Length: 427
Ligand code: KE4
Image 1: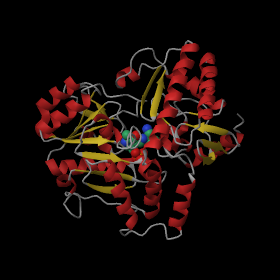
Image 2 (image 1 turned 135 degrees about the vertical axis):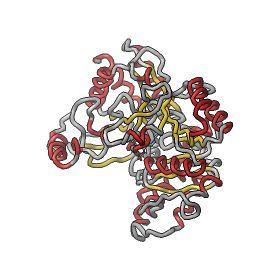
Image 3 (image 1 turned 90 degrees about the vertical axis):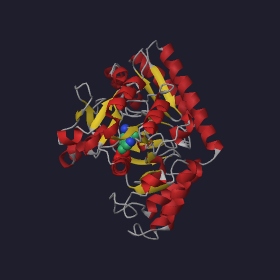
Image 4 (image 1 turned 180 degrees about the vertical axis):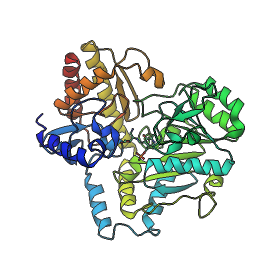
């Protein structure tokens, strides 16, 4: 692929933005090569400024589940924009989107719209602390819940797994209130809670982990989180920013039959515009200002144009046929990629939950952060570049998930599978 225009733009961008990007993963550091500048997107495809077309499995990191520039979504946004872009006051669209979300997530009795997944998780943790009057938060290694200070924390060396900052700029004081455990380790979780429950406000978890690739919960893991948190009055927060409407219309909580106390959403509910949301049990959410004392606010929260994009997107996927089509496409992709790896004799492990997936370059099972890290990232990097040169745009990191949309056709997937076979043979 000729990408001279992207390269020239990237050089300029690097003088203006940190490593030329507005979000780190876009810089292609994990895979090498120069990031592509995208000029437009339509359906399952994105087009770079040099005119190259790619079948897109990043889909803006999940939101574009109906495909890019869906005619109904574009039409709805256009008409919304003509009525003004932001009021800073309540509008009917907030009610409409809230009703759609709450119908799909019965555990959400009251919700608050925000403008990103980070805001959603940060706010959910604050209200859990306000509700329980406790300070500590439990999270799991490898789970990413956005970039608020208290969540950029990794397991400390201490036996009590007290958190230490996972980024400069996060004060040790913040980090020490975040306890980090291995994902899928129900035993470690139960024993930590037994010791520390009196000071623990909440447990936050990606019910399917999309930020170390795609890691599924072991049978009984989520059930243990639910059972132990109920017993000790700890708020269980499902971070469904990625899994929401992706692993099922009703999210991971529907798929696994677990009712969390709070849920965080984002991505799909904005249909490509900035929307996040957090919500759950009424007695917890009534703590949120101005109804309650826990402060949280946002200039563009509930923005009429963003709400409209979310409403239209959910309307399109809110039917059995949509998920039947998504499932059929995912099965075709899964079988094809497994088959390609077997034929090319390259050891890989493929995991998926609904329409989020990951191929690990490893021949051992991946069930947490430590086992995901055993994957051969150099091999993944070569695979990524080979696929890009064949017109397939995957997530530029071994530790990210890929996504499917309603716009992907059987021939898109056939092309993806044959590109994968050629790339794996070359790998
Ligand atoms: P945002 O603040 O990026 O809208 O959402 C943060 C977030 C929260 N929770 C989960 C489970 C998430 O996956 C995310 C964001 N996901 C990343 C992809 N790994 C967004 C892409 C990026 O950071 O550029």
